[in-house]
Length: 323
Image (cartoon, rainbow, N blue to C red; front, side, top):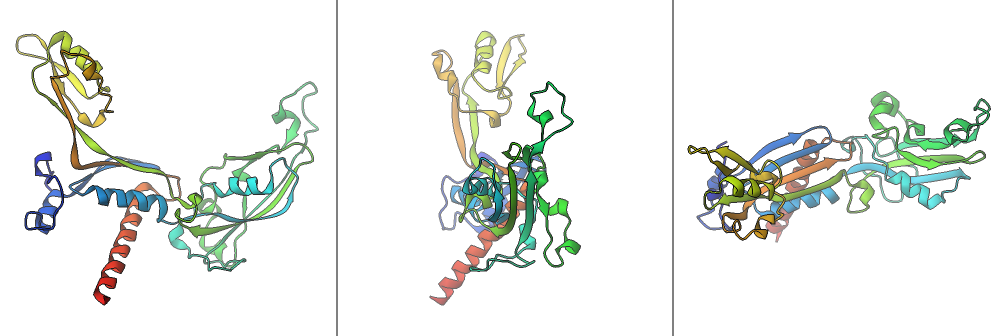
């Protein structure tokens, strides 16, 4: 697909002949800038801000994930109250793929193998009889005084043990600290994990954050040379303004990559430089960032957000057709 330029973007979207479907296909593109298993940065080029914001809101609140919903407390003699402990457990990110599970039916307290994962957390803190005599380090004198997510034991329901593996449904990290205890303290809990969406509770949000910003646009209106060029470069973030040697041996400023601009506006502190730069934003070029909590990679989460939006549009069109 041919890369669109700033001059191709209409200032606003109108449903007339000037904004046809063919023109949209020519302008619209998605360009991935950075990607790994937890974070993705990509550009959405040639769309309206409402669409970009719809994706952001869907990622935060309507793409489902798995989280601890029910905590059955059989014994808790730690310093954490039951409700505080349950809240902390609910915020633990899990690897379980929500696409493989169904939503639990309202009023169902037990759950089934299709909609529930069950974990057990049973730990007791004791004295370490082999600790050095003069040690005061809790790690030396106590056993199991720190409760981590690795202490959570998966209890397969029905045939889940044949379908999943413990490493595929457990916590994203094994070293998340849940609580601290002292000798005599004990936890005996049963945990139910269900499928939900962030609109119901933030613990079901599959992303740590999802946000976008407009692509900065920086234009030099005149030549900036020598000492002014060096000063101009310091007014912006590293990588935005570069300096090159001109034909006459002078240092000349040029725009390297406006993408890294942080909108500091430091250049306006200098009377001799503020007329040399014109700054703005490209209205239809969005730099989108998704940070996953770890259950699904960010590219999959974005595709799931697209599916949710398509379903909403289909439902809306069906309602219009029936009206």
